[in-house]
Image (tube, rainbow, N blue to C red; front, side):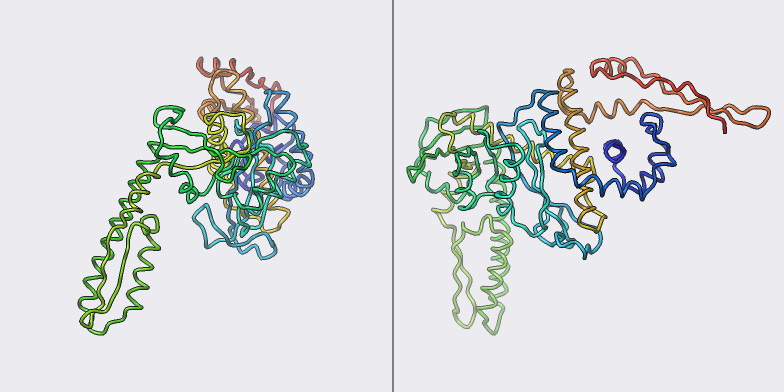
Length: 452
């Protein structure tokens, strides 16, 4: 409890909790554990004990969320993130270098797969080696969740990074239902549908269209077209296109001054330029040739590629085997993946999941479990706020409650003994109303006097 509460209130290391945080907090009064009983090694031992009960804790929390807030688990959102290590972590086989979502490719990392509901309520997670590709984690996660919670008619929602032929077959087997993102290169198969009218408007700037499977399978594809996304992708293409033209112009000028032609070197430079600006690379047809002892570089815009980019920008594709939902229902279920992304942001920014300072595998797993449990507290408090009509984003409410403080009033006596009266501050009117809506009471004033 101390590890989780400390991370929720002010995310710190175990050493900082023992030496600073706990002694400056009101937890000793609230929990009945003295500051002398909270020390670094004891907190580490708590980590070692906790991690062994991960699965049963997850199951218990799932049942609690169902009974307290009526949370349903019929739609499961799965996403993956990574978090990096400070230190070499030589004794941890899971600490590997891979695709870093934290912008730290220089550090070893582990990969974390998280399953949440459409409200962002966590159902479970697993830790994988840092060099695991997202798609290779899907089978393990599905089997783990089904072993814990059964194989009832749930809908698995995943983005296109999880898609592979093996995972598609896995989802289709045993009657599993799914809504998954599809690589954009598959849009070409639906060019006719992109040109047609009769789109279903979900809201202003977003349209969807149900399309039958080109292979005639028991699947439906959902074309999605976003105005905001189209503007963003077009701006990106324009920026990269300008960079390519600028780079080719400079290269052409250098080639005209080159006395000894080296066409292979020029072609490698063109390749690197296109690689850096890959989003617009397909828009160019580039040729190189030796003319009058000079390397001549020429290029032109590929008209068909440009027209396709203009047609497909802002569009993306989903696929599902749920045949009785509308295109809007399928899109709304898929877009809830933002809840999983939001969970990772809270883990990393608010709960300080990163970086990991522990080096042992078991301690790393325990650190992630504490962060997971703290996120559970965060979402639980968010549901309390929602029931109280305060929205489901608790950050502002937490900041307001932080106005409550506990202080010691020091009274010196003539015989040199100091009396410390422990008191809790009185909340302002606005905070009292807030606490009343949340059905929370201010802790009673301790009735004892501490002699120092």
